[in-house]
Image (cartoon, rainbow, N blue to C red; front, side):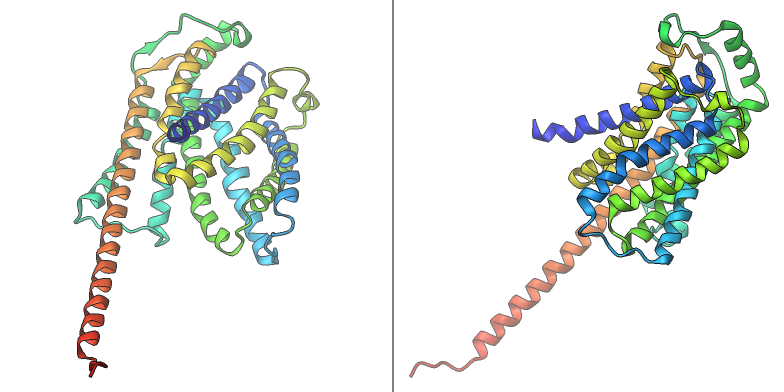
Length: 364
């Protein structure tokens, strides 16, 4: 059972993320919740959830927070949370839950691209792993273009969950509009959010080298993004009705995203990466798309197009292509390091033998 725990964990992680996308889409469409207000409440709940944990577990061993690091964390919170997630939610309003989940598959690819640009990763085009990485980036762009500009035949759902039932006129209007500028704009916003998110992940690694207190680091980002999101929301949404939650899907979505996504999934991700490595965690990303497609059809009653399926497949292929190239390079580096170590040990052993034979005998 112990060997199966990482596999069960990644399934749970991707199911949690799929639930986040489905509930967010339901809150925006069925609950008519403003996406900017949603982001503020989500980060507020995440902050309330994480700050006590950070105080309990890292208060005594926390690294001293300098003013420069404080400013870096503040800017990281804006780049990877406030900006990226607000743009992602707005793109989700203009498109569909399936498309939102499909674009998440771009995240490891865009993260790798920024890591290359900043010199944290290398690409050797003359080798097979290097070609696989470049091919993955190319296929990723093809997948994004397919999602944005090709719809194709549609799969109409025959089962609707009563809680998420929707006005058919509104749905028909949304389907009609999605063929035009709103759909393309939504695709562009989703892609921009993933690019910003990927840059955030790369820059995070640099800041964590000087400030390794991960729980406090995450809590501060949630706190900063909550304050930033409040400024954005209050500037763009003045209707008091949009700020009311009540006992409805709005409240449930906010609490779910603030606790399950910010709290549970982040912890499980760290545990999986520690046990099986980051590549194992990244390869589970397409599960998010599969769960979201099923949920969007049977729970939200969304129309799934052939273009969305093909685009999602291309993004999954690009993900595995980049990860395969990365895995092969890591194996090659490890073999090289082991060979160097073996040669060093062999040389030391030969030197010891020569020294022992050259010493004069102490026996008379």
